Image (cartoon, rainbow, N blue to C red):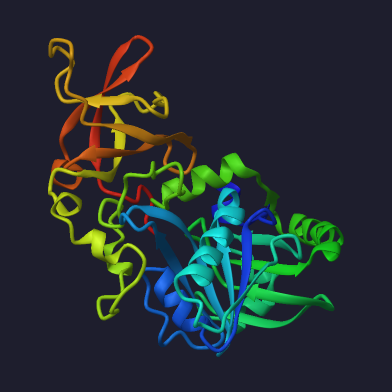
Length: 332
């Protein structure tokens, strides 16, 4: 984990869902499917995007990249690849069949190698031509490539998309070149810790089907001027705007060596008679080498108003005190 931040790391992100959205009305379609406003997203630019269900709860997230005025490369969570495509197709075929849009799953057409860390530009010099969230179509090492300057670690980084069959050979070359620079290869568990240090969410971990963009502190992503999008009307319901809703915050245990269990319940007073009042639960919990201690993320009732407050988390031995903190744990 320290090496990835201080020097660099390589991660196989090929399992990310990928959908190509093409057609005269592709931009309008994406505007309706996501909370973001893509009206001015120019070719060569991308944006972190959030998708809701009709009830206003978070369904998926990913990156929407504009390759050309009528062509977009959309990524989804790994586990959401098939269901997001089906979700899009359902709306396109039953609600908006007047739109000229074509959806194609390209998850298995592209291998993706994520290069992250302070020295990422030394390994991928092409990144220097891209600003953050920039996208370009060209070649990398003589291979057709879609290069995204994006990061799920909070460090300088990019995602190299190449034809699937070219992935293993390119992976080997980058590992060899990276090793000479002091890079390391890292896996899913390390990726989870790195993103949590920066306060980045994973749909299905920080969300449970009852979480809104406001609960996650992501309300700024919502296109305020947009006339409509899936879930917009539901977000106006009083219950979804209530101040005591569970909100995503950080947790730091009094014992820095204690790693809370994910799913651990949180209470204000461990001496309260049963049935106790549960205020929320731990969504992610790790031992962070970069922070030098354990860290946790949690959904807590009125969480943002509780910053600095001491709560108690359930453990196998009883309860452990932990302080509610703001996210992220590491600032870039």
